[in-house]
Length: 90
Image 1 (spheres, rainbow, N blue to C red):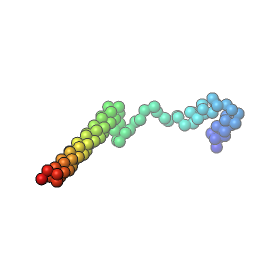
Image 2: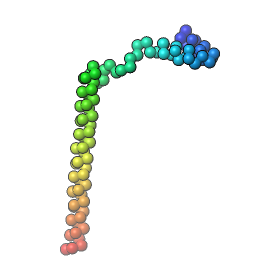
Image 3: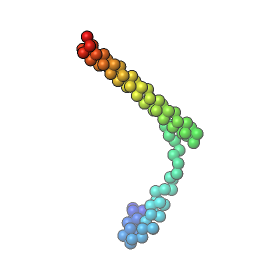
Image 4: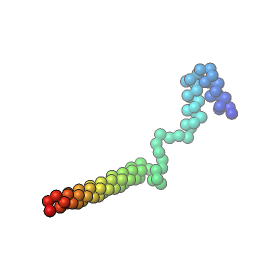
């Protein structure tokens, strides 16, 4: 409760600088600037490699899906064109 009282007191006295110093002191004693672990990977190189493979797989899967979609669309257009051609020219 002492922490809450100190924060409340600094705000009620309009000591904004003191308030933020206390917040920083109370909350950031164990904080670091950088992530330590991502998806089980630790260390800068391992995390970077994990991100690279993740986004490589993501982008490749989009390209494959887009390619399949375009192939299906082209097939559908050709089939429709053929139906129209046979209806009007036979």
